[in-house]
Length: 335
Ligand code: P6P
Image 1 (spheres, rainbow, N blue to C red):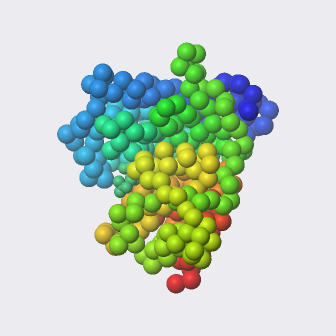
Image 2 (cartoon, rainbow, N blue to C red; image 1 turned 90 degrees about the vertical axis):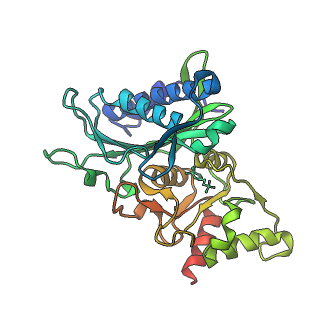
């Protein structure tokens, strides 16, 4: 059981003792955590807060926005724009980047986020969450541009998510392993409840949307077929399946007990590499998984090595227990 310390103390120790993070990054993470607390409160109000349902607008992905998608996006923008730690932000809910207005000092970090992932679950009271990634703005005295965000996931300096479920839990890495903080609503602060999170290298649990089976590529079909054959098949063991249709919730289960999560390319939209977004979903989740001893690929290469071509680039995602991810990836290279 982790010693009961606050997120603030954990971050101060990461800065002062471990020398892992500068004070500006510590400030950034504290501000993001406070924003997640506000989002959690809005989510928890549900129908009582008049925040359920559609916003009658579409995001850059052409997806219908929920009222809470827009609220969460605004909370993160307003919480972070004045602090002087950021140069700009990028969000699933915004077409282009949001440059910190001139009335505020500009900092050296770039913040990317999916403000409310899994929002199709909002109206049915299933766990959803915020995913965030932090990069450093490239050196130079020119103004910040969209191309500054197009860095491989291996360049991240911090990544995390906050899952709004039975508990509100913030999961964070600054490159020194993964720590989990549970929101103590009486204190109004995040408290360290687990550190040095480790994902078992093997698992009997896979997460994939089975309704897409007929559209999958052969390596994915082979892997799932073998899992479904259970003890009598080539895997020699039975598997269980979970699919919450909320990446944050599925990944949190894997961070908590292992498993493999897959949203692979499929032939419904052959020109799209996958459904999930590289910069603010796959990269932060991929780094967290790796920092906890797991693996994350697109079937052929490490997700964190992918050089992004544009801000809302999509990617095929296979992540979780290391030996399972390596097996699926080997099936792709066997082609
Ligand atoms: P499907 C939520 O919309 C999301 O982006 C991820 O959180 C989730 O894993 C996936 O899409 C679910 O997609 O096609 O199963 O609804």
